[in-house]
Length: 267
Image (tube, rainbow, N blue to C red):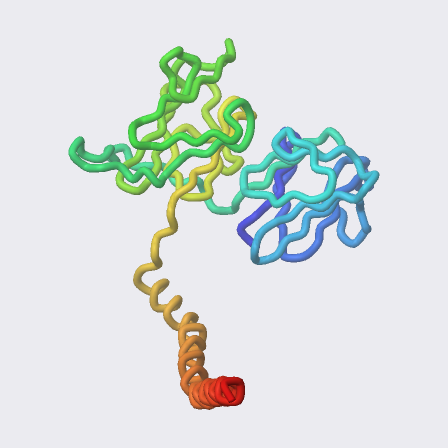
């Protein structure tokens, strides 16, 4: 997981890379919350190739992820805000947020949008709600906004989300503070499945879309990796054929037993 870092929000400190392993979160020598290796802290980040988990021991300090208290364990995604003992940390990616080209346009009017691409709320007022992107979605304080955030400091027309082909485009409409994508402050962004976008600090959404098949070299690599797995099922039919005579013999034996019972029973 070399592509994930831990950011200490608002503290002017360098991001800390999160290598595979267990990283404690506790008070360092200077008294600030920091990564503490091998100290057996009550709060730990466990990193492997599948992702990042947050573990909290009973009696540990107050820990929240995206405003929700974590009492034992939580799986994290890039962009999550982690509060440990009153300090905000943020899980960010080493990969830059992709900016859409200025000439990227929405689908033609006769083209059917991909209704499987949705924006799912994972925090704030819209937690648990889904918004399809069959049409452009306005985010703002305006009464006609699709995602309405009724905060006096929030712009009437903050941003617009729309599909351009199979890609999700976030366009800023002149807001004061922009938005957060995977923990990074942005104006415009090209979003992919799994990306997290935050408006007004705590209204969180994740882009959900069907995974595309790998193409080119990636497809070839997948085919090579899949070869052993694809060969494994072939053993099933061969094993089935080899067991077939035994099944026939068993069936014949049962039939013979039933016939004997009928014969002796009728006698």
